[in-house]
Image (cartoon, rainbow, N blue to C red; front, side, top):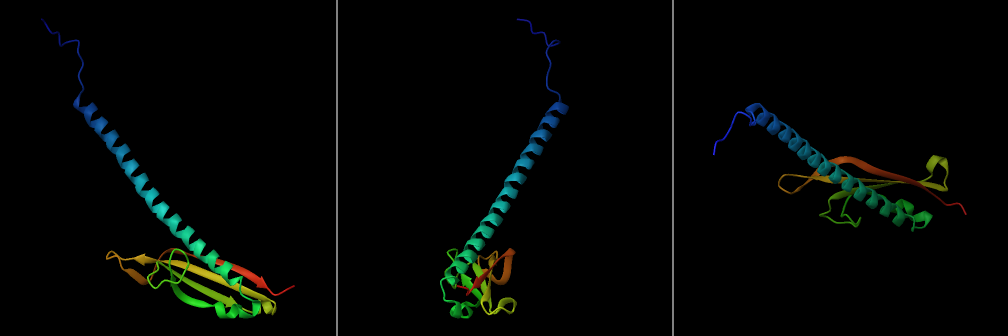
Length: 145
């Protein structure tokens, strides 16, 4: 059996290096996309949860009588993901009440700000350091009939 190697073609070293470079580039691009997707997902989750907490607070305040709204003000209260007060909560909520809004005694402005506490490498929460931008919701409540 006689083998003729003159007609056969092989893969050159340049082609192998080029193929490895292309596969490496595609792999790195995919890893970067997955990593960025993970960061984006965490950001969206934090924003959604903060919005839920702020909205829940406003809905609760709407149940109070107009004369009691001033008593619902709070400063830097730790809450859990459900919006309930929790000393170990991951979020901090502040509620500002502005009575006589715009000089009108029948209007009260409610402003709720929610921020997520930053977690340290140790797993503890940084008390005055937050993740991302705060979520701020405002509404006007009236005493008109």
